Figure 1 (cartoon, rainbow, N blue to C red):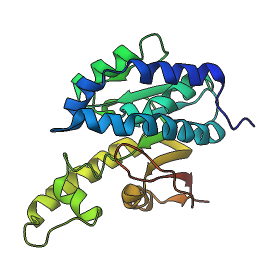
Figure 2: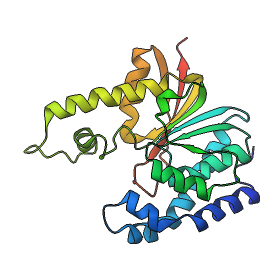
Figure 3: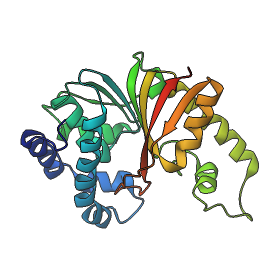
Figure 4: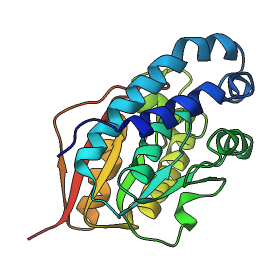
Length: 232
């Protein structure tokens, strides 16, 4: 079993990271300081993305299907690996249309496209679900994200808004996880694991969470892989 990416894959990843419009991405990712943000994270995002792609290279089955929820710059190495080396079909969803346009411009010529769509509307079933830093996104779920990340302020925390956000996050998790065949893999951040295990318990499925964490460079949430199987 190969553990390293092929040179052609590495070259494709390097090319995309070289031509990405970091000035425009900075305005999307940051309220201010976008240039400094990408100067600091561009290299780590590429290298740590390659490391994650090499992990998935050993875990995913050639010819399968993956759904990436909230896919952005950090997911580019894995998407390139899946399509070029494993010949897998990938669906990369991102609700921010301006970012999707920038990503597709840089990835032009590669066998996948980013889509500005809600991942729950994708009709296909998949054997790998990537849902990283989505269910605890501080922009979409400010109260929920603060609580799960240990940043909640007891003076300003809004419990009613939290309940609304919790319902929305649960619906988003369920809508994506329903597309996962069994056995299947879920790649998610450590903070988001409770959403995965809760859904699996409700469906009477077995969720085996691997022990190893994999670092990320953009948000900083460590990633773990989980195996989801039908109970015997």
